[in-house]
Image (cartoon, rainbow, N blue to C red; front, side, top):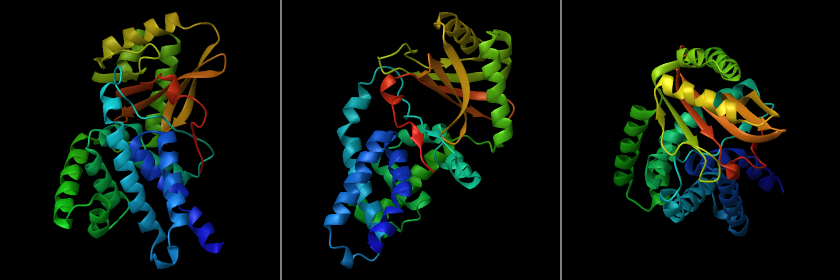
Length: 289
């Protein structure tokens, strides 16, 4: 019983690993559960490290799942964004970890990597696995894994946000953005955005969303004001913790219809990412501490 209890403590860490890889809460929960089922049926007395064993098995499951859904992602209607997580009652340390590890901006960068690059990078650079463990998980030589991780690391460093922004500065920009949108003030919205800001919306063909990213502060501002004029009565915009950072939840009659994340440099908003696909906004949005 003690061994089972100790192993179960790994579940949140394993979930965050799988979620980074798959970008889906439900998919992550499913593969983590499958990894634990395999653990319970294995000869655990012969396993030196439960965490290393579970991460290895989980990595293989995630690679298999990513390959299976590749066609589904390619045929997706419009831009694809990860499923958002709304955090509740997190400790300050846990919130800081979320902001650096599970931010929507970083998840989007990870999605640009191949399945094997994603697994290798996360195993080695985030979860401190040895290259021997990465080799077992991917079925490649250690030399090949070193090259793969190095390539992924360069791409992540090139594409991820380069700014260290305080939670206060980020949150203040988001708060000002909410106010400007609620007041349908296109000029104020545009001033909060960088001139080359990018707005990406994910409707998945199941909710109205732009089929291509919208680029430019003025264009985004006009779009936001236009959207507000079409919303039904009973809508609300609320500040919320989205993937460890300040974001916005849109509701109509108490039901979530949109979750918006932001990338900022502390002075302006660089990108706006809005999930509207109802399949990504149902039950289980909350990440438990």
